[in-house]
Amino acid sequence: MDVDALTAIDVHTHAEVSADGHGSLSPELLGASAEFFKSHTERQPTIGQMAAHYRERHMAAVVFTVDAEHATGHPRISNEEIAETCALHADVLIPFASVDPWKGRAGVREARRLVREHGVRGFKFHPSIQAFSPDDRMAYPLYEAIEELGVPAVFHTGQTGIGAGVPGGGGIRLKYSNPMLVDEVAVDFPELRIILAHPSFPWQDEALAVATHKPYVHIDLSGWSPKYFPPQLVKYANSLLKDKVLFGSDYPVITPDRWLSDFEGLDIKPEVRPRILKENAARLLGLTKPAPPGTP
Image (cartoon, rainbow, N blue to C red; front, side):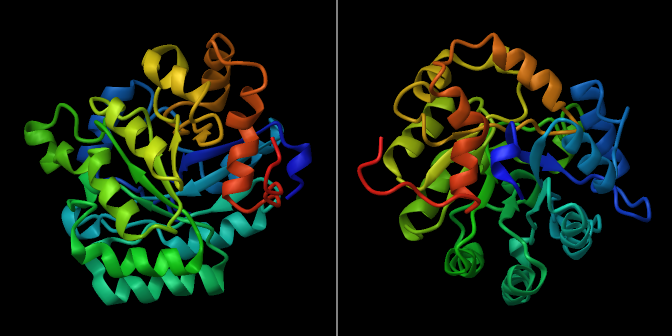
């Protein structure tokens, strides 16, 4: 991947359809998401189509699904398929995996194999959909493996559009996506690189507190148009967290075109913009060498 040739790195995109047409969500949850985001079912691109979309824009994208088989009973899209298809488009796609923490030791073995044999570069957790609290010791062997493998872990935080409007929210509990629960993980796994996904409504201040306090906790800006970002998030992105905030769209729910267009109108310092759009992600993902100590 030629990082210098890229205009941006989108750290948050979803593989929603497998090669055989299997969806990442059940029809009920997909329908709720479509109603919440208004455009979710208009386009569900294949991974190959995602590659073309980002290649046209001279961008790279992190791609993942969510493995929530234990809680939902819905089979996931294969991590191997995502990794293998991303490898065919390695100029623009970066494969992440998702392993349901309820899978125990089998999940730990899978995580190790996915990194060592399939080139996976990180892992995605969605505690609300996967029905687990991030600080549950049940998940700790999986975190330990990810920390040892030296790759990042993305945690969905805040409210989710998935299940919105369905009776009982489709069984999805929002409390599991409070960033303070991930703070526990950051304490117990101090070398684990963590990304708190999304502006963490209604826990934005909590997310900012965790990211400023724990050196390896980052925040991605996916899932919201930048014009709706809380003012404190913009303030911290411009200052204390300028090296720890990452561009993410949540594609295909939000396109990078829309996100970047709205980002243009945000009051972000000129010297901070390239950090958010590419430089911070490139460093976190190991695509560029870290700057020497003392480098401004």
